[in-house]
Image 1 (cartoon, helix red, strand yellow):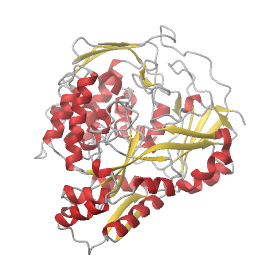
Image 2 (tube, rainbow, N blue to C red):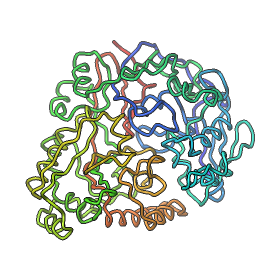
Image 3 (spheres, rainbow, N blue to C red):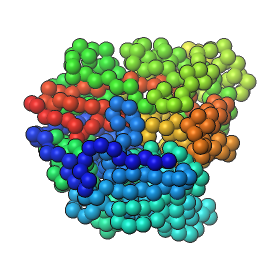
Image 4 (cartoon, rainbow, N blue to C red):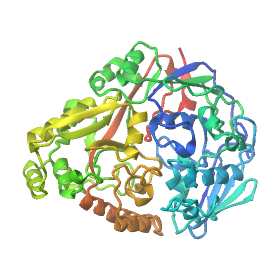
Length: 528
């Protein structure tokens, strides 16, 4: 197995072209959950900023979603799919001038994996030999080691990663945020670094991030990639309410919104014309269940609630037909998707009531429906509540009072008292990414995003079988078998796949919103 760079760029990996004409533009984001650290950023708001500040080993092609060697890696090679040799391009530097070398990656990965550092992306390193030695014991004892034995620096531009079992798709995964490099300055002051990161990407932070306001990044003229940023600067502007940001977009006071409010979708295309952007997303929106709550512990209760939801009606009424009813836990944009996998995702009121009665569910108590505030979720969650009232006789209470930065920690802390909005955009284009990070035992909070707190050894084993498969066909078969376990246990109800709607002002052009929901900030040109 050999994945190597092809075409483009200088041999020394230096700046691959002249910078653009400059200018500044602004982008709407919500409040990030955490400081801007690659190892602790696994949500869209902070992720957009971090992706502008850092460049990983590989990047993902905006059209095919496939891994492309336009990042720091010259090649990623293996003869057994277990031990991978990573060779870096020469000449890449961090924003403080320090070199991007093999230690930059190995040290960053060890820091993220070491459990006392409490990095939310720690579990992405779970398949590297020695990861378990970096985890604290159940009794609170300290980890046995601070470095994974499966990582080895060979020289300045070469390092080796040994996995606990074969994983043919590993090179595709390392373009994700968790795998970004870190400079020596990070380890001197991690807290200060999170406020004003020093990355190796097309933009640099010359000022700290201000909570509730945002941050302005400036172009890094010594960027090591083939395509320096066109604009001189980008302002990431925090809005508490999506509707407020949309009003500013209409007035030309913010330049780019990656996601429009649901009630704006019907008129946005006619209003913005060729400045309206639709992109098929590698995502899924689900209704998660707190499996730790006795009221929702029975899979039949969870299936009943799912079968009482008319997904198509909500898509038509709330999203103007731009949400596709989900039929699988896996997105249609990756191999392994099955369009008829989820029987419990189909409206069946009679069966839903039968299942709820068989489970002995108490219908006299309202259920809480949780979602994060200010992001346009009110209408569709309320529509679900109304359908549950009509189809199952369940009263409900909307719990949408928390902003995302407060909502996510409550999910981490088993604070959901009823079904909750759970959304996922792929980190890398592999079916496993819709399964492992959301439902594996290794992804239980605080190390991961398994907010249902679902754990099943059978599922974990099938997932590992897929990861260790010798071919894509064998991997997909194992991932589908793992999904069948999810369909039986039903820790969450798949709801929608998204055709994302964004728009931009007349001040900018060449705006690309990819299948990961990210704006390619470096590509944006300022024309106004």
